[in-house]
Length: 115
Length: 112
Image (tube, rainbow over all chains, first blue to last red; front, top):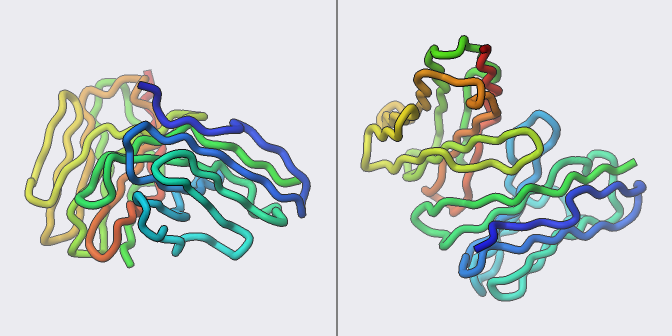
């Protein structure tokens, strides 16, 4: 089947606007993760979801960031009142399960540019 | 929490030579260590992984070694080819959380 997909692939927005990023995980994958990757840097964990359990939001950098996931399907990452420092590639990944170390399959990312 | 350090940040080798990338981790309870390759404009892709009950794993030209006592693990690429040029990330998982913590990445350039 298809891999992890993300939309949009690119997003340019003005400072202060809200943006919504979408992730479609691989069907049957119970765990879903969001990461932020600034230019030339590593992946910074933001949040993960596992089934219907409460998500781990410990990586969200501020209360302007939020994410939702309905069941084991699509997830959206919302950034309110965007700032220039939010410019980065936002990567989504999914895996069969959370515990025990299961391969994470990454989407192509959404490149966000805040002017 | 877990912290993963990765070295070197850049590595340039001649085609056919070997490349070695090293990582250290801080949480002794971590039990899963994947390596990802990221090509320009794409998401990371798993190339090899190792679990804490194994000391070494090999897949064709790629091998990973794990030293649990010293809390470090390494990626070895032999007979490098230009298509190996990419950014490589190590990561550690497990222990006190279900998060995959990534190293800062190594940009590998294989010169033809």
